Length: 278
Image (cartoon, rainbow, N blue to C red):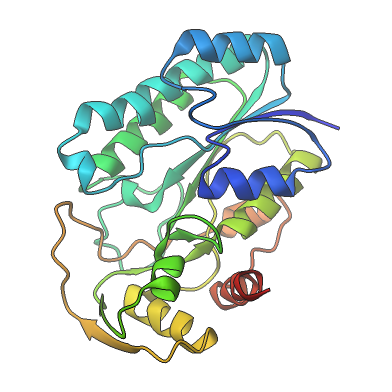
């Protein structure tokens, strides 16, 4: 049994991971219970618990708002993460951190590998990349997993918006392609990692396998939940922050290093649909 701290434990990903790690000795803290931007709080918790793993699910994820809250985005996604990595290293804990497909500019035509050049086109992506670099510079035991288009049967996300909106007609952008990824699948993988840690630290990609546009994803949700909505494709949807047009990531290295077969986008969605209707 591993001793594990989870930060941001009441968020979409934190909730899923907390549930998946029920066999471990888990210390789960919501952002209200543990503010990762307060290094004194962080140090006190880590020193008292002496965990084997620290799983950081706390993050600033408001992509559009980040454009006007740059300082806050960097404080949470980079500065706090740097301090967390330093304290984790001090207590010989392995840090598991989550980043994003938004570290890429979206100009590619084939899936991005983990060692491909990064070039974020919005503040959110830049702040997450700064966090990656801060962790890598500490050079302790760490895993950074870039995930994308995260959703679940719980929490605020695209799946629940499509499923829950009263609107009968939805206009959904068809010019952004990525890999919708179930928080449940990320959580199950993290459980696998804790039980089979290869100690091969670094940056990896983890997304459900396959790709689709937001429009195609909305259509799939509509069909699988039998919502009966009219889903229309639109070329553009005006947002404050730019989004990468193509942010599919190659997860081959992750599957090889961790000896783990990642679920397809379709199967991931089927499981979330089952959870949401049971």
